[in-house]
Length: 420
Image (cartoon, rainbow, N blue to C red; front, side):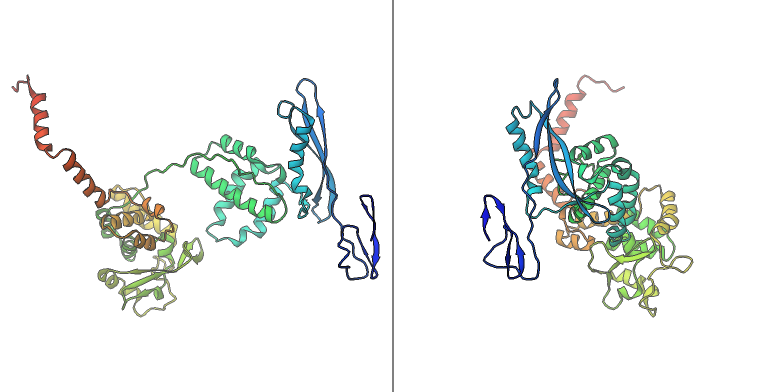
């Protein structure tokens, strides 16, 4: 092969045709093969406007159509004003940085689709692979918030500023904003992997500060009152939740075979959401020791029954449903006692009781199924015993004569008063 100037000249090697950019030391096999590489492009920069001139860039880019065909189209974009880039050379440098992905050897043409079109593909192929309990809230977020705002926008046109404006204009709670951004990130990961986008619109995104409102929790005394007013099997189910701290979907998914009466243990493997029985949230079994009293109370529900049968049955003889269990069994009792909360309040109460008993954090995390200790601490609603002991010792050091000081203040404030 020979080169003439900078243009590659094709030559025949062993019956094949090899481009000038191929390595001549290793001929290609086959009747006809050609190695092609996109030409390196610098694009074009020109000024537009007189009062407020801006630099405009043009370049060509490959895109993949709906039928999979790849075509070359011309792109045009405003790089910035002359105040941003005083000279044309500076504007060309900016364009060169933006064209670096296009000029990369690994570059592939992007698929052309609007956000609504991509979401349709994503829901049909990716969303269906998630847990049944995860799918409904994501579908709701997409339908109610994301499609109305981003639906007509091209995927390549969605940037960080647009997402930031969406969060500002929506005026949603901080938690809802963070959930929507988490869904957008999930969509974007698939979009990058499937060749729809190359950029990351979440760089520099400012999210609202989260709020941590006080969650309802049942104290030990309140839990005892609820259990005493409930009827079987609800009273035993409430007792089990209060003692172990398992989730409401987990108690509804318990089978008879999950209880070991001889060893006084119970294993939590599954969770129920609607009509679906899936793996629990931590995706691994959690084994709990049961008190002798609770193990004895579970004998009528587990002894001599089919191991695959539901442990607790509703009034109609079916497996407990999480929503119906709360609405029909727990809420009437809470209304009667004047308490607020749901089954999750038993879980918070359990975490608080474990903290008061000075149970090691590792044990508390295992029982509650938390990965992070910070999450477990968020379930604690009372001052720990260690903190109480510390405050008492500090009080003794700072002011050991508190009663005398109080009497002195009382006598000084009582001077000049006459009791009639």
